[in-house]
Image (tube, rainbow, N blue to C red; front, side):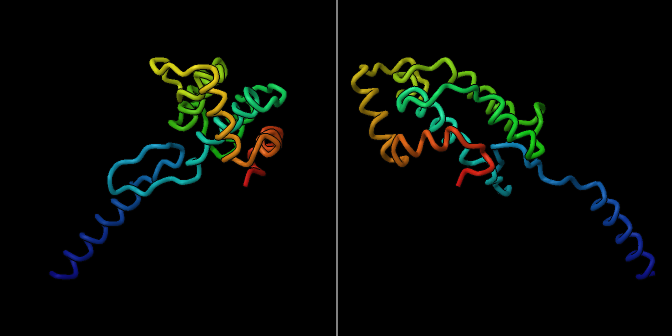
Length: 146
């Protein structure tokens, strides 16, 4: 009798495991207790660095979409995924942002003067390695960022 119950329990467990889902790795949010996907944690900073290189450091403007969204696609995260949609929305905001809006973290209700925005850009670019480093990163592909 014990063997029969054990066999039934084991077969139910196997069916449950077979229908289990793997964690969705193409997102940037998580629920309490879930593992955190760290692969894309720095992408927001990379977008800011890219924009700062263009708006403050004088890097030649280049479209962000092919570089960043292409990187996500190569990582297996297509347009239907959370991370892709979030990055696409962020790129849309950053493409039209001026230095002042970038310094305000995209919040137009903050009112920074042009000088305050330039001071922010100068200190931020210095903290990120200087304009030369930002331009260098701007001109490389995401796979080689370290």
